[in-house]
Each structure stands twice: as structure tokens, then as C-alpha cells.
Length: 405
Image (cartoon, rainbow, N blue to C red; front, top):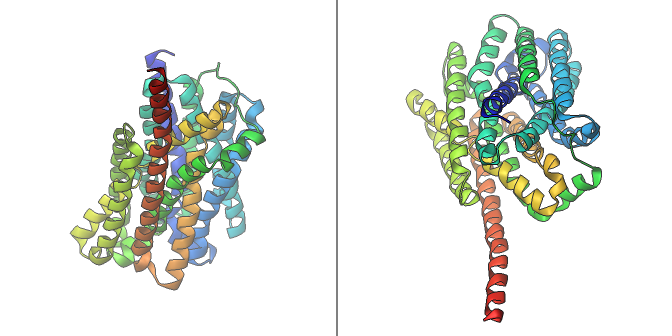
């Protein structure tokens, strides 16, 4: 693939992840409006986030296997068209159950399209550029936080929340055309079977590595899912500032993806220990200083700056382990990060809902700090296991050399 086409493909997939991220996260800024419009509690509205994430996590690997008969190009374009259609249906839905069903279906489709796009990068992009290309594509979700969520929140607050869904559908149509122009037509069909999927999910090293994005994302989303009431009730900022604060959060998240790309070399898994520890400290400090405007905004920016750092390292580590276990499982392995992240979203938003209902919004930063510390401990376990495993070949090589001499 020529460099120009390679760059265009990466840009097209980045725009696609922006659309997918906006589809997933746009509802976060509109929870109070949806809660009021549908006559449900804030915690029930939060289940639209966790329901999406659970469907994403459970349905993605299953749909990946079911779509293995189709080419990756056909699968991605067909899925994007369905997501656009479901966004439009969501805009006219008038009941909580219908909206929840739409979110569940959309979650499965979003997870599958992103997973296939990551496997396309492994196939089509120059090997030395795969890590950087993944960081660019994943940054589309952060750009969604910068542009998609604040704009959707503004539109939903000043018109009706349904208008945000219509706007997102228009974005999806543009992205569908863009991806269709640049995704190669000679891609292989997906590789995947039920036995390979079962093998990945039962390998203890892969399961332990899988827990890094699960717990890292749970920490972030136990807090981020309820960021609108946090901004209003904990930080004490006025309603008109919410879109601007979300914009600041999203800009910092783009920087987080850039940092993640820089981190994903050398002893990357070892470096993640410090990342999660720093996250926990920042959340704890936020709990004491959030009501001081300047300090609260600075700490919220720091929270976002650390929110995505682990993604690229987790993705490359999972694919590396999966290929060692079963080389044919590379495509299925591409789904592990998105699946793990959305299990984390489901866990984090659900725990956050319980905390909000039981203790109040002000306790969410303590919850996030606790989950970040668990993520740190799991990362320590991964790092030690990786070092121990890498030592074995060196020890065997030394023994062979001693025998020869």
C-alpha cells in the first residue's frame, strides 16, 4: 500500500472512530435531559451507557465470528450504515425501553466495526507504523469528546436531546462515504472461529492482560459517566459552562492518546504501573479540591490526560500474546481491547450509579481512585509474569551454550 493511501486509510478510520465515539459518549452529556424527558431516574438514564457497553463487550466477539464469511470492507461499510439507521430510530424513540434496545444493538455494531478496523490496520499498514496508526485511530474517540460530545450536549440542551442523535446520523453518513473511498477492496475475510475465541478467553496470560483495559476503563467511567452532575454539583460551575468544560476534557484526552503512543515502546507494561498510581492520586486530590474552580479544572484536565494512556500498550500487548498463543487468532485478538474497555465502561458506570444513588455524586472520585489502584496491582502482576516468561528462553539459551562449551 502506498504511503498516501495508507495515511488516507488511517484518517478515514480516525473519522470513523470519531463517529463511533460520538455515538457512544454523546448520551453522557445529555443524561439529565433524557432522564427528565423519559421520566426516569438519573441512575436509570446511566444504564443507557452501561447497557451499550455490556452489549459492546458481549456481542462484539460473537459478531466478529459470525461475519467471518464476509470481507472486512463489506462488513465495515454495512455496519456503519446500520449504525446511522439506528441513530435515526433513536431520535424518534419515545420510551426508555426502546431507546435501551437501540443502544444495545448499536453497541454490538460499534464494537465490531472498530475491532475489524484494527485488524485492517494490522493487515494493510506498514508493520513499523502499526502502533502509531492505532494511537491515531483510537484518538478519534478523544476527538469525539472534544467536538462530538460538547456539540451534541449543546444541541441537546438548546433544542431537544433527540436533535443530537439526528446530527450524529448526518456525521455518520459523511464518514460512511469517506471510509468507502479509502478502505482497500482486496482485504482478506476475517479469520475467526468459536474454538479460537474460546482459546483466547481461557488463556491465563491473555485474561490477566485483558484485565488492564477492563479496570483502567472502569476507573475512568465510574467518574466520567456522571461528569455533567459532577461539574454542576461538585465543582459548582454554572450550566452554561458544561460544554466548555467537556471541550477542555476532550482536548486533554487527545493528549492522553498521544502520550499513550509515546509510551508503547520498550518496557511499556512496566510504565503503566506508574500511570495507574498517578491516576489514583489525582482522583483523591480532586475529591478535596474540586470546589475551588481553578484547582478543580486543573485536576479534571489531569484526570483526562491520564484517561487513555494505557490503550495502545494494552492493544499491542494483547495482540502479541494472542499471536504467541495462536497465530490464526490475530483478527479476533483485535477485538480484545474494545471488548475489555467496554466491560470496563459497564462496570464503571454501574458502580458509579450505585455510588450516586447510595452516597451521592461527590463520592465518585474516591470510587475511581480505588479502581485505579486495583488496575495498578493487576498491571504489576502482568509485568512480573512477562519478566518471568522472558527469562525462561534466556535461561534455556544459556544452558545450551554451556553444554556446547
